Length: 128
Image 1 (spheres, rainbow, N blue to C red):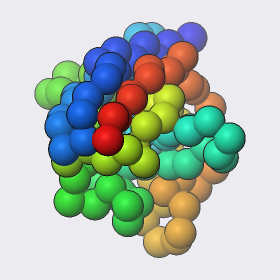
Image 2: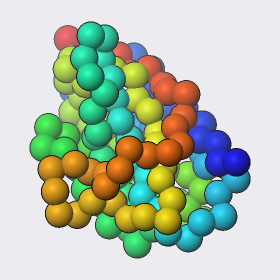
Image 3: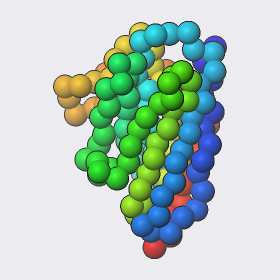
């Protein structure tokens, strides 16, 4: 059973930076799409960034140039480097993964299908 465990959230002032981490346990798949979602109070959950097993990445427009998704060489930890944080980035951030699939490189959605595996979330709070 795959488990995803996030860490690295916290409080920061606008313009600051945070790096989120997601440790992956129990995965033996070589093909996958992994990424980050976020959900602010009263808002729908939204995809933020994805990376697949080939290292291909994609981002939603509102984080391009500010956020960077990456993974370690062993592909057991996923990262989200968040720079130039804005008040609107305040949300619970979730790590997610789907296996035996790549990320969606041709449509509006970052994923072909809703990911099967989710972490418990880590809170990011940006003060203005």
